[in-house]
Amino acid sequence: MSSSHDRAAAEEWLLVPDDANDLAPVVWPASASRRDGRLQIGGVDAGELAARFGTPLYVLDEHEVRGRARRALAAFQRAAARHGAEARVYYAGKAFLSAAVAQWVLEEGLRIDVASPGELAVALAAGADPALLGLHGNNKSASQLARAVEIGIGTIIVDSVDEIVRLASVTDGASRRQPVLIRVNTGIHAETHDFLATAHEDQKFGFSLDGAREAAALVRAIPGVELVGLHCHIGSQIFGSEGFAASAERLVALHAELGGLDVLNLGGGFGIAYTRDQRPAVIEELADAVVDAVASTCARLDVPVPTLVFEPGRAIVGTAGVTLYEVGTVKPVALEGGHVRTYVSVDGGMSDNARPALYGADYSARIASRVSDAAPALVRVVGSHCESGDIVVNAEYLPADVAPGDLLAVPATGAYCFSLSSNYNYMPRPPVVAVRDAEARVIVHGETVDDLLARDAVLAQKGDS
Image (cartoon, rainbow, N blue to C red; front, side, top):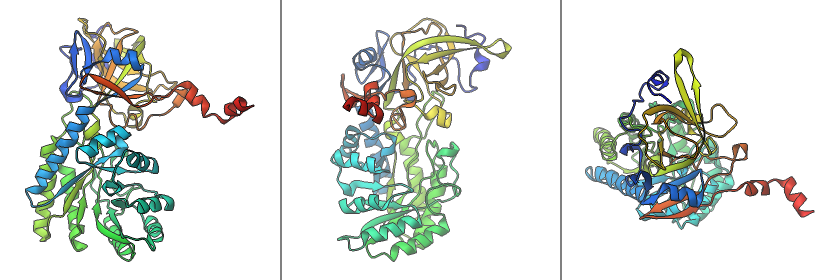
């Protein structure tokens, strides 16, 4: 493969690296390094992980998750304390949730957001105090709400008038008043993919500012419910603080109009780097900017700064994850103008990482099993699925001698890869292995083809006959 004639086929932001073996710190866990040319994560050799657990394989650095959880909590608490207020941090479980991860974030002082009966069940099974949980969702059923009230969940974030009616029914005669927040669409358009922007008017979540006023009146009329605050989430994978600050100002104005509530939840959506060119906001700077905006608006409106709540998910777990694959096929493809793109096929794909297909998300990649003196060559890493859109890494430079049998590592896969995984083409979902202090352990078992066949009712009937 040659890199001299394929540059025109690359993304404009993608520069030819001086070394196609290097590990850009911005996209890898802090523990990532090379020893004798082989990738190490959490002190564990990637080749040994692949040999022991197979590929594809999700690898999660426990220290990275814990460290980012501690750092986020400290950043928001310090920022709030400067204004005489308190801050709480909820881990957004939808990014990645397992019993181990739930235990890690709880031990580091975070609470947990859940958005389905399954996520609630995982958090409870992991030992979470229900009072430290928040329940999200745009279509909560009566049974789901009843379960949340029954266990004494900390907060329910209400999303519609229908939900308020259901909540009134399930709290009738309850022994305690259920704390709720109202989800508000502030009209701030986050600079992110349309599917990730969640505070504009034309989408399924929450109430408009006018609708939130009406919702507040409805909630306050329910004896078994207590309105404790407002909630807003402007989107995901956002790098700057401007959108958060603008949304906070509008939310504080409504907060003051409603008489000053106890809690203001500004959501999450804080971005991480997936490629070496990306520079997300430093969490401490972001916390200061957002909290300062809230405090400034509160001062102007002459209301105290309420307890501030934030919901990072990706920012806690995203960079902690690395996915390992084995290269199977390497195919140079001639393009117009004499350019060449080399397709590197791996043994996973859109079933273990749907984000490139869903959002056009970019990722990085490195050969994990060795280093090479070969010149950098432009490649597209693709999966094994029967889809032309089955792209894992759209554009990357790898050593030109990348070959079948190489172990390939894709960083920054800790968020939304496991959560969005599927069995498309009857591909078993990979296991999740946690690494820490040169040791590895399975925290989520992988599937086998036999597991998938066992779910087929017709095949099960044949086995019983």
